[in-house]
Structure formats: structure tokens, C-alpha cells
Image 1 (cartoon, one colour):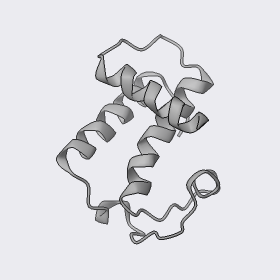
Image 2 (cartoon, rainbow, N blue to C red):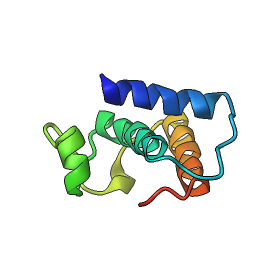
Image 3 (cartoon, one colour):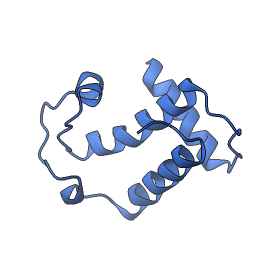
Length: 93
């Protein structure tokens, strides 16, 4: 439930066009990371990092290569927005 709330917060931040603060908080970066990876999980991506596997698991995954994940135009736009926000906040990769 916590990750869903964090993801919704990140989505609302992006959807409203709110400007990011100069310095990222760990919670902000974590919520953006979660929101981005929830999209990949929903489309069948097989995660490689321990952090992502611990958060999402790989049960039912179908795509080892992130480029092969079938994303809608909207998913791609949302992911691009999240990545821009992460870069602006200087979130760790």
C-alpha cells in the first residue's frame, strides 16, 4: 500500500506539472523509481537488480530486454516524464 501511495504521489507531481524542488528527498526519488518500475512490471519486464527483484519479483515476467517490453505511447510518455524528473532531482541510478 505504501508503494502505491508513493507512486500516486509521483504521478500527481508529474500530472500537475509541479516543479521539482532543487534537492531531491530520498522519498521523492524512491516514489519516482517505484512509479517507473511499476509500469515495466505490469508489462512483463524481468528485473535484474536486487532492489527491483525484492520490490516487484520476477514471477510471470516475459521480457529480459527492456527494449522488448511492449509499452503503449502513454506508458512511454509517462516513463520519459519520470526519467526527466529523476534527472532533474539528481536521483541515484
